Image 1 (cartoon, rainbow, N blue to C red):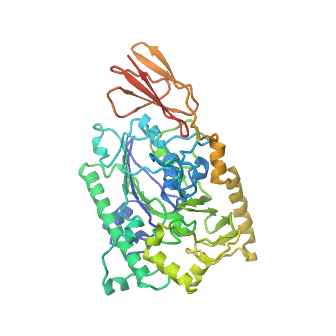
Image 2 (image 1 turned 135 degrees about the vertical axis):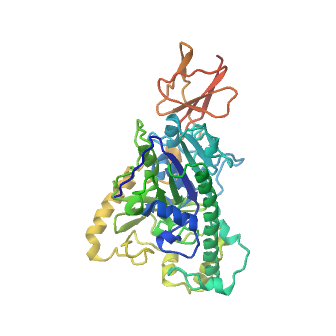
Image 3 (image 1 turned 60 degrees about the horizontal axis):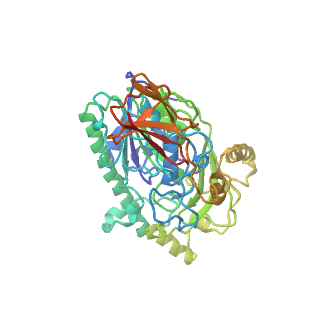
Length: 514
């Protein structure tokens, strides 16, 4: 546990989010990529050794970041279940309808809380929350969104997303490498020795160097605005690396991600070994900003605190394949539950087959020449449970489930994991059953009640008439919605609109004449 400090009352926040990366960085002992800007950020801040996403793909994990809730609670655990706009009503991967989830528990995009407390919130520019984005979440969400567009002196929360390290950037590389360059690449022990795999790894390192350059631009802008010292910066990946058995995998390579936090104050530096989950990010930001709200997150703040004993994760449908797996990570051990034991961990993903590494692994498997690690990956059956001592076995190659020495560890973790599965609102049912529980057979989206407008002197009060709905308003000629909080007195300058939003419900917009 570290001592964190800062003097300013409303600190600024900056999130720098890369895609598809595991611990391929100098602060985790891998120095192949030259990342001077990220290294400096690590020196100025705290390196979190055990930060986890609850899902090894982007859209479910991002739904957790923006809400502080698990995807299996939100109903966002199935990849690409939601499309913002599409002519097709049904998903070609599973013939189920596209949908924006209807959670049971009250949820709110946490940036609404920041905006209600005077923060200027920007997102540049990927949202991808596997659900309809709240119209009240951002002051700006676009490729030009920037803290520089705020009012003078206004505190900000700004997100910049970088896709240069996405898995698709691996197979899009057409540049051949010199023999000397390839020889300097260390292949993880999981993979067989192959220059195709080595080439993919080198491409990833070069993409990380491009990422570092892009991050340097943003940090330089922050410094030129004299804001670096008074801004809390998080650098992290949305999930694990772009390779097979990394992305889409519930193993450490898929859910344990690089994470650096530059807090405010010279004492806030070093390494941190506490367990951190994406569900903790939102409550941490609000904790630091000293903002309270009326209903809880599933996550806990890790600011000045070490509150977490376990982290949980889930896999479900990725693209055309479904594999329900659940995991619990404790300080030293990790237990995995496999819902389907009659299929392999490997799932054919057409998108991933474009990568040389996947082509090599497929070819070796067809020739029955896979190494031990990938023979297990391709095996047609799985154990119901897998137990690993992950502090000693990062790649999770030694399954301890049959070792009586670890029976007590197994039973303890099993108890907590099964309880988490049972208590999750949607984590213990199929996707079709989940949709049936959320919507009627016609997939009709429920409507919100009309809000009530109360005249009060020279302004108006708004009564939502809807539980857990967010309320916003704007003048007729404006594009950005203002956050409305209870007992606010709004004073529009002419005709105006009121918006109500609750996930899973139809967005309601009412026009009023002054």
